[in-house]
Length: 117
Image (cartoon, rainbow, N blue to C red; front, side, top):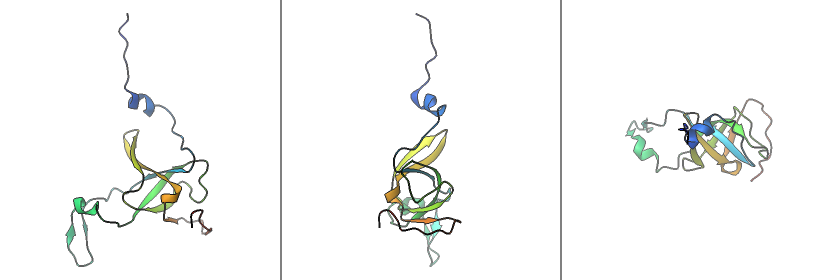
């Protein structure tokens, strides 16, 4: 039997195109998830930030075919525990459902009634 080179599953997946399904939205979180300061000037470590319910803004990278109110490059507001973390081509992303998005900021200026209000 010939000795074949076998690539791991994540390595093979990185070479393929990724398409979002249903109402899924792929977002990139900002890199500034480290320490932050409170209004009073106290330093809040990154480990303490994970238990808070402080919303985070993220940039939309891709959307599924059933997503109605969000487009790529929009900024969306999410809770820190929303979605699942995924790695695609050595970059970290967050995969969420459209209903987990609490607000959308864009430059189109066409406010619509949300699907899940």
